[in-house]
Image (cartoon, rainbow, N blue to C red; front, side, top):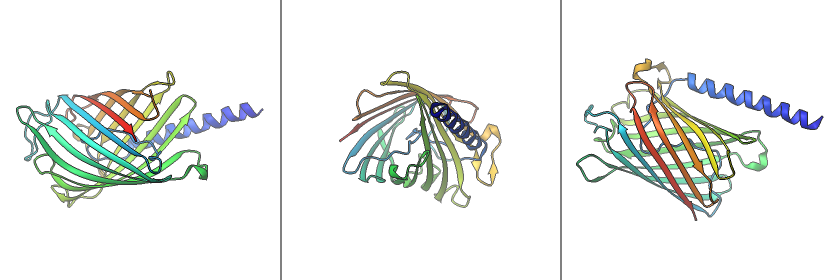
Length: 265
């Protein structure tokens, strides 16, 4: 009887998470950049530990024009250096340095962000993992129409047997720049993966930018991208994620490669 009830409970949780995932895809969103392409899990870095990560993203087929003074993405390489430190079992802070290599140009600094994050402690025994990240930062005008931005990212995730699902319904606001007079935009992202072996987990990630919270953009103006991905879990101290991004409409970069390599100390 107890195993049957457990299976029923897991089935109900899976249905609820699937419904939440669908709901996130129906809400309006903001554009997704290509400097740090990642769906966050709710877990924070352990207290006293530090994670160093390198996010490498190359746009194989993207925008080739300079739009409103912003450099094109086509054949650009974006390298983001991230350092995150855990201060307690429920709080961490991350710092990013964004850089870009444009075709025919050298390596350039793009901007920097800071990202504190808090989570619901495990001893609260919530049925899903929950954390909240907020991110504030600057990016140069030649790389973004908005030079100062603020992001609020709720994070919900759950491990169900070998399946893992994470939802990041993200709200973003321009503080200074082209869209500073606009309201919040919402960019949903989500991940679904399967533990094929203890060390190999293939999956799929979704990233969207659907417009402002108060008004959804037309589909042709949205950002819609799907990434088949693979995570390699060779050691608790290391993180590796690789994906191929496919744009689903003409306003999104058509093909993009991403790789994340991280090391905990």
